Image (cartoon, rainbow, N blue to C red; front, side):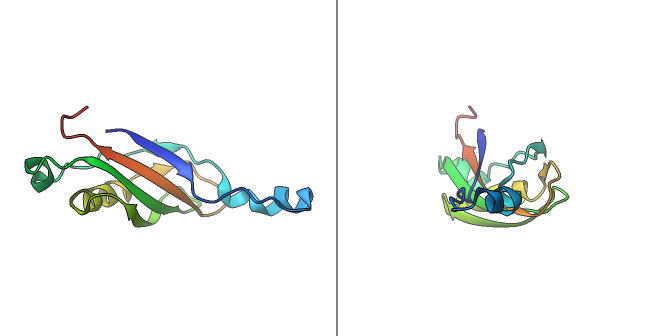
Length: 111
């Protein structure tokens, strides 16, 4: 299972650099994953040889807990398992809540 993390908020290109430094990047801070729970491969998906990537949009609170997740794309048989696992992840604390995109890959052969 491979997991990647990237911010879903684009950098703001504003005329005033001073305003951007003070506000725009606060919600766009890269948050390191402190602990993660691997998703349980759904038995029906395994029997049907369903694999692939599930992309989730997650909201990480200032204390590093995941407060919400939304499936952006991925097979419906895998989406629930990815969401269940990511809600147990913990991220490094930050100055405020932030949104990030998480990719969870399910490989039927276990690699």
